[in-house]
Image 1 (cartoon, one colour):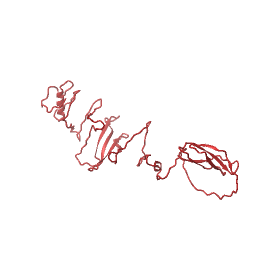
Image 2: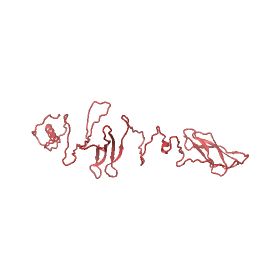
Image 3: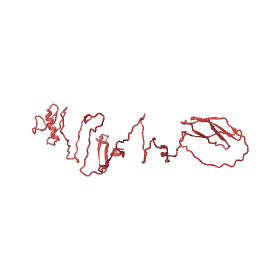
Length: 310
């Protein structure tokens, strides 16, 4: 039913605390008396009653024992809903507005938030989290705000754990999405830095602290290994003529296949005898190698090679 334009100061017949089956107008009158602060501290338990408060500007909760004034809207046993209906089809409406004014002079760090509570083993209610929107700049025409997410850790009071802010221009948003096939945990390092992406950046060079023009090689077969380089000066050549003995070809399969044909070089042996080698028939999965030297029967075991590729 609709709220009346005026009320009669006389109390309708019936008890002061209406219940199911009593006159709904009397329940409405007592409700308005409570809203206006009139002296009739009644508890309305009228069930299944609709009220159309089209001309109602605000409801004020006043508690003289609390500073500032406080109040509650409650529902027992199920969700309390607030509903707004309009004619939109492809836009978003902000169905609920929360305002926290100040009688003082606003300054940076002023904000408004929502507290979320439930029950824990020793607290009822227990603060579980909050969403705070805070101003980092309150200047005229330069206002900046951020979203703060306080959480509880190890029983301590709510403490800010995440903060989201932006300096982007109007119309630009950061979109977060994923297509994981299982639960994934992403742990941030305990340091300040910039998150790198694979598009438009030389990620490997940036991670190793090298300029973008420097390529960083990784070991595809084993971790903890690295590449070294050096020069050496052999003695002057003094053998005027020698026969060259060549071993049978040995097929080599790479531990990890390359995506394109690599460069492969003979890398010597650990033995003391003069042994060299040649590499041929190189593919993305392997190659063939022959060892050769100046003495027949030389031990060419432990021959080594290096393969460079992508």
